[in-house]
Every structure is written in structure tokens, then in C-alpha cells.
Image (cartoon, rainbow, N blue to C red):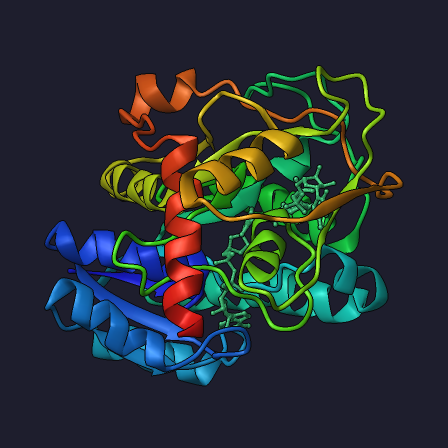
Length: 334
Ligand code: NAD
Ligand code: UD1
């Protein structure tokens, strides 16, 4: 029985496929390559020494997806496929609603047709909006998203919740990721978005490799110990491992469950920059800039439910995250 991984050649999906293959799972990837490259499939094979099936397919293309379900005995799906650029989503809301929400609905319809009713979904800490940290899964979440990307995550969570109520055969797991950074330990898989990055670590990587002159730290007058915003950064390899725990559980579950995937510890923007410079022995020039619209001051999770119910804890340190991020970008640019 196989696990279908949509978006499996992307940043988090590719590292998750490595962990799934290493855990002995059969993997089938469906990705339209809109934000990833086919060469990722060779890198996954190189790291694991294992084979898997890859389909260049859009999850909205029902005929193509139906074909995949016909060819493989799929028992569960991890649904990473989606667009994720917050600022792009503000200027292209219809594309985001179509791709993320439309894509999820199309996938669910094909899953239902194939009688495969177990799904793990990539949600985001963004759904907590302006709640008070530490964020826990039982907190009320309203409609406080600040951008269409965040709204797609919120709506998909609701859609999956309604689906779970409609039929007890559905087992739905919502994973709310905090801030994934770092790269696969091999240095072959990591995060290097197209264009100028808007997320912190990809931007630092570009400065460290001389592609951008300096980092702008958005705001140093927040109510935090050093004045910069605080986030719960999680190593992508830990995050990927969390999906193994999730798949083991979703196989036999009925209804819906939500888990935070984070470390539970917050670090400031300055902590990240200083740690990156220290562990990699490299300068990252920066200057303070005005606050960025839509940023929450402090975001970190309560990780206890994931530990208690699916046995997930993180292992990597902030040093590991910064070292692996730099290792990946150095390999990519050499
Ligand atoms: P990514 O862009 O690297 O990977 C997404 C993959 O999905 C890409 O390979 C892309 O080609 C593919 N894709 C997009 N639309 C598709 C479609 N319609 N059909 C088939 N494939 C499609 O992003 P990522 O960082 O790996 O994120 C994976 C998931 O996790 C996304 O849903 C994202 O919203 C969510 N998430 C990411 C973060 C983060 O910081 N990276 C945080 C929270 C949640
Ligand atoms: C952002 C998204 C969030 C999404 C997450 C993962 C916003 C408002 N939120 O979260 O919805 O789930 O990415 O994709 O965009 N920073 C700088 N300089 C930079 C870049 C970032 O100082 O060049 C700061 C930010 O102000 C923030 C921190 O670094 O305080 C982390 O930023 P980022 O990596 O963009 O993640 P989030 O804003 O937490």
C-alpha cells in the first residue's frame, strides 16, 4: 500500500519523501512542478537509494489524478500541493483560491471515488491569527487571516472538518506548521524560492552567498527582549519526521485531529541572524527597516498534544537549522 504525496518535489514534501522511503513506505508523488524541479526526484533517489513513482500532474486535473489512483494501491494521502507566497496571494487571490481550495476539493473528490479516505493536510500557524501564544490546537480560530494564502488554509481546515463529520470513514489530520527552516542533512534538498525571497531564512541564504547585499530586519521596536519578532523555527527534517508519525496514526483514525508541528520555543530575528553568523563563521550584513504589515509580534506553539498523542518531538537545534540551511545553499550555488 502506498502513500500519495501531492507537492512531493517541493521543499517540505521532498524531505518528507526521503523520511517516508527511509521508513520503508511505498511513495507515489504527484506534483505539477509549478514551484519545484524534476531534478529533485533524482536527489531523493540518491539520498535514499530507493525507487518511487513520480507523476507530473496538477491535483485539479481529475483525469490525471484518477489515473494515479487506478495504477497504485493508495491508502493515504499527504497533501502538500499548494501555492504559498503570502504577498503574491494578495495580488492574485483567485489563483490562490483556485489552486489551493479548488485543488483540495478536486483531490478529495477523486479520493472519495477511489475509496481512499485518509488524508494529512499541510496547514499553517497563520490560522491562529492574533491569539495569545503559546498557540494550542483547542484555541478558537476566527476569520482573522491577513492575506488570501492564510484564508485558503483556514477554509480548507473547515472543508476537511465538514467532510469528517459527513462520513466516519474519513480520517483527517491537520498539521499546523510553524516556521520550517533548514535543509536535508545531505545538503541536496532545501528551500530556494524563485525571485527575491520574502521569508527570513531564504533571504539570509542569499545574503550569505553574496546574491543580495544585506538583510533588512523588519522592526526593532517590538515589545520583545531585543525588539525583533519572535517565531517558532522548526528544522525541516524534524517537520518531515512528524509526517511519518501522522501517517501511522491517520491510517486507522476516524474523524479529525489537529496537531501543531513546532518546537515550542521562540527565537527572535536577531537570534537567527547571530546564530547563522556564528555557526557558519560568515558575516550577514543587516540593517533595521520599518515593521512589515501583517506580522504578528510573537508566534510559538504548545507542542504537547503532538508529543502526547502522536509521539512527535523535535531533535534538531537552532545551530543545526542554521548550519544545514547554509550547507544546502553553498552546495546549490557551487
Ligand atoms: P513548495 O512550494 O516548495 O512545495 C509545494 C509543491 O506543490 C511544489 O512542488 C509545487 O510545484 C506543487 N504544487 C503547487 N500547486 C500544485 C497543484 N495544483 N498540483 C500539483 N502540485 C502543485 O512549498 P513548501 O514550503 O514545501 O510547502 C508545502 C505545503 O506546506 C504548502 O501547502 C504550504 O502552504 C504549507 N506550509 C508551508 C510553510 C512554509 O513555511 N514552507 C508553512 C506552513 C505551511
Ligand atoms: C510567513 C507568513 C505565514 C506563512 C509563513 C511560512 C507573513 C505575514 N506570514 O510567516 O503566513 O505561513 O511565512 O511560509 O508573511 N523578516 C525580516 N526580514 C526579511 C524576512 C523576514 O526581518 O527579509 C522577519 C519577519 O518580519 C518575521 C520573521 O522574520 O518577523 C519571519 O518571517 P517569515 O520567514 O516571512 O515568516 P512569518 O512571517 O512568520
